[in-house]
Amino acid sequence: MRKAITLATITRTLAMAARKIDPVYPGTAVARLESVHQRLAAIPQSDLDGAWPDARRALLRAGGLRDLPNARPGQGYTGHAFNDYNHCDLTTMLGDVQDESNADGSVAEISRSNLLGPGIREASLPELGEGGSWSTCTNGCASDPPRDVAHIQFRSRIAFKLVWTPANDYASFVLVDDDGKLLRKGTPQPPLPAKSQRQMNYRVVQGSKYAVVADGDPAE
Image 1 (cartoon, rainbow, N blue to C red):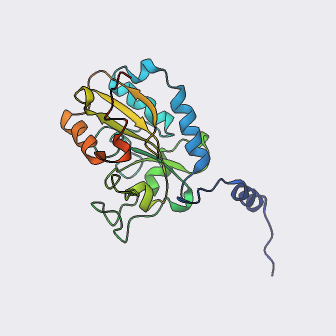
Image 2 (cartoon, helix red, strand yellow):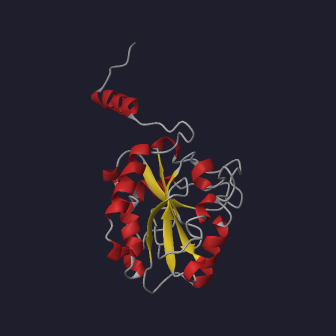
Image 3 (cartoon, helix red, strand yellow):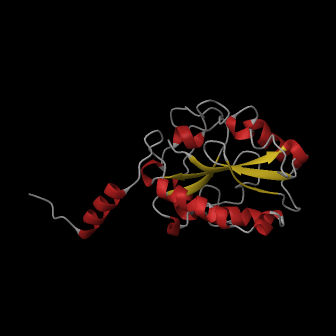
């Protein structure tokens, strides 16, 4: 017996046909990534140079994430995003890959049960487009090609990476895209993440394409 074709099936099929596919990282939610870049460009510079908690919330919104500091970890909690040395990759991934968990251990220093899907679906803002967003770990990003959560676990590019720059004693950050090109920068006001976290954040990318902009003069 042939199954009836529903409106939902037709809509889903049309959406998949119109989906932009990244041939190198097919888990990337490309349209959502483009929406993130548009939102990021629209953030007033005064927000990025204002109090860090407000700047961080602006980055969450631009990245398509809700500010959920009271949610349970693994269930949408985003209080860690950009607040430590490691959760500084804003990744936009398709729903097809959101429940990947690094079960084979391909991403070093990451749990083999790194199931992020429930939190991604809870915290992601739907208006940015298909797929979801998350602040994934940067471990492994200095390899060429990168061997971090975004690129290996989700087979996705990053929309942006936050890197604290050593050029002015880690008081400023730069936001770079998947190729390491500058998107935005800021010099936020206290309270900032601990200096040790900002230093470690830079060390993770040191020597890679993601450090090139951070190694320059933040005033330029």
